[in-house]
Image (cartoon, rainbow, N blue to C red; front, side, top):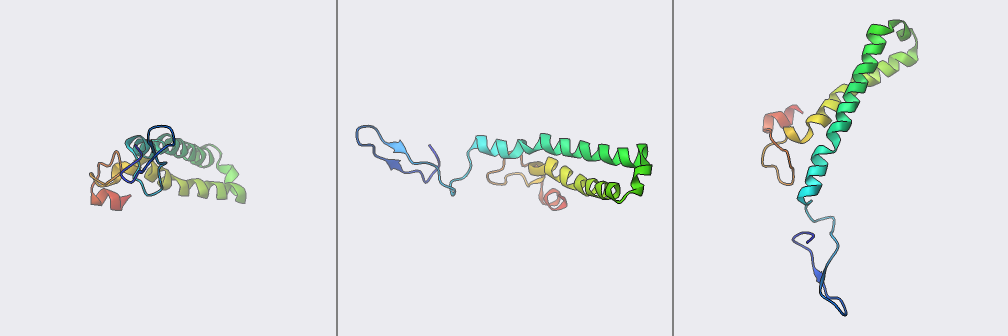
Length: 114
């Protein structure tokens, strides 16, 4: 079954087959889980890599900051940190009971803070 709006198409010599899903059908549970949890490892990797670049440029090799290129790289990675955190927190910050969102465990304040 593909959702509440799926129509049954009658085959010529066989049983009815469900119609393909449309873009208006709500996501099923497996799709909701994929949307909720697929981004978390990528967001964690993004956060860790940005932290490493910041550490490398500020602590280990501050002499590199004399070049404009490295200052731009530093700024780009500093700006990437809040986005990586927001992507990681993602659905957890959404108010509990949000339709079609697996893992929503927050409230309006956590949603607004994100």
